[in-house]
Structure formats: structure tokens, C-alpha cells
Image (cartoon, rainbow, N blue to C red; front, side, top):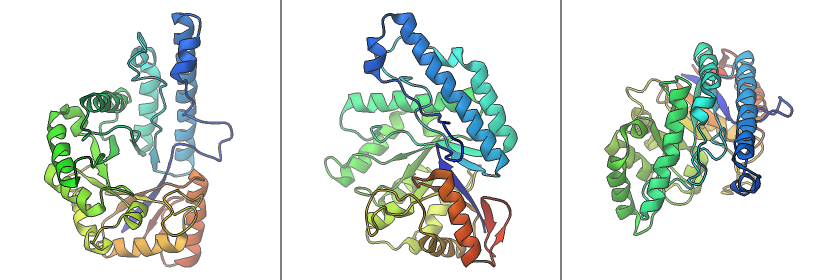
Amino acid sequence: MKVRLGYVAIALRLPKVTSSSTVTYRTYSRLGNEQERLNKLKSVTLSNLNDLAKILEYNKKNNIHFYRITSKLVPLATHPEVKNWDYRKIFKIDFESIGELINSSGIRVDTHPDQFNVINSVKEEVFKSTIRNLIYHVNFFEDINYKHGKMVIHVGSSQGGKEKALERFKANYERMPSEIKNRLMLENDDKTFTAEETLGLCEDLNLPMVLDVHHYHCNHGEKKLEDMLNRIINTWEGEFYNPKFHFSSPKEGGLDRKHADYIDGEAFIKFIEKCALVGKDIDIMLEAKKKDLALYDLAIYIRQNRPEWDWIDTSTFEVR
């Protein structure tokens, strides 16, 4: 079983590099005229795209093959009050360059739309806003010519009870454009929908499931993790990429929902040994505050404590 490790958004070994610089609507609206507003959006977006290219080059150089791109790459891209912001046309060549870098290096990238996107909301305006925001992610994958790009999202609201909420998700899912449905992954959350409930929904809709291990421990339901792993991995049958997992450690220990700076190496190894019983190659996104530094730190721990596992490169190892 091969395991690839990835990280989220910021490479901390690259000083003063971020692809997540923002422009608030308040700042935007206070600028003197439309041209000033547009220039501000263009300046910040160009900086983000240039820094994203630096991060991708860094990943390529350091043999990191899995990376989550920020949802904040293009400021105010979906804000309903921002008009004439044709960033797709303005930055067409820049997006294509990003895509060439991703595709030529073979790196796997994905996105994680913000939590205010709720597919199963009881409010139609929230559902429509969610569609608008998810289309932004679809357009991004299309603009960088990355046909295998996917976005992970939570099930959402439990208003009216979980059973009704799950049925509402299914009904709203059918209303969404196919280009969104084709790029969706669903993730269990730490408060509401358990891994078992999310898995059932994924199986009903034929969607790949992203198991968040920390969320499972915070909100585990009745099913043991090892009893679901095979089914979770099977939701990825026919997908281009390997099954994806999220792994983080509690900041204050126990069931603290906040992410720690680094990964608890012992807990990670125990999880990998459970996955090894299934024996399928997997990719794991590390959701740690120290980003790439946490990846390197975890690799050192694994090398020291499981010397029999074979390392293929900086971020990839094999359990025999």
C-alpha cells in the first residue's frame, strides 16, 4: 500500500508567499471609482497567481504530490455586487500556465469550498449562492485545464432533522448542474453528520467520500472506523485518483475540534495500519497549522518509528 502525504494552501518554508491575499467588499466599495476597484482586484489576483506558481514549483522540487489550492485565489470572484470583474478573461494565460505546471508535474490538487456553502439549506437563496460559489471552483479547474479536479464539501445543515436533511441534500443535488456534480466529494463533519451517515449518502449518490479521521473521533456515531474503511474506499471505484483522507490532530488533546500545529505521529501510524488491512493506495491531506512543516515532521517520525516502511520520496511511502 502506497501512501502520499499532502498539505493545505501555504508553504511555510517559502517566506512571504501566499496565494490567499484578499480584498474585502468593504475595502473594494470604498475605492474612488470603478477603475480603481478593478485595478485593486487585478493586483491582488495576479499576486496570488504568481505565489501559487511559486508554491507549485516548490512542491515539485520537494516531491510533494498532493496539495489543496486555496478558495481565496480570486478575491470577490462570486460577490453579487461586484460587476464587470471578468477575471477569467483577464488572467486566461496565467490560469493556463498554472495548469501546465500542475499537469506536467503530475501533482494532485483539489479545493475545499468554504463552510457557508450548504447544498441542503432550507433557504433557496443560500442554495443559489452555493451553486454560484461551486461554479467558481468548476471554472477554475476548467481554466487551468485540469480535468480531474474535485472539490470536497460537507453534507451541511441538519435543520428539520437528519433524515429530512439527507433527503433534502439528495433533492437539491439533482437540481445542480452536472459540471458541479461531477466534481463533488463529500466529507463527514465533527458535529453533525457522522462518517456512517455521510458514507450512506455517498453510496446513494455514487459520490466519492473523503473520510476526515479527526472528525470521526469527534463525531463517530456507532460504527467502528475499521468496519467502514473498505466501503469508504470502494466509493472511489472508477475515479482517476486514489481514495483521499483528511488527517489532523486535536490542538488541546482529546476531542478538541481545533487543529494542532503538527500531526500526532503515533495516532497517524495506527490509522495507516488499519488502512493497510484493506491494502489500497491512498492519499492523505494533512490539515495541520504548520502546513508543509508538519508534513516533514511527520515523515521524520514515521522513519524513526516504522523503519521497515519504504520511502519512495519526500512525501510518499509504502507499507508492505
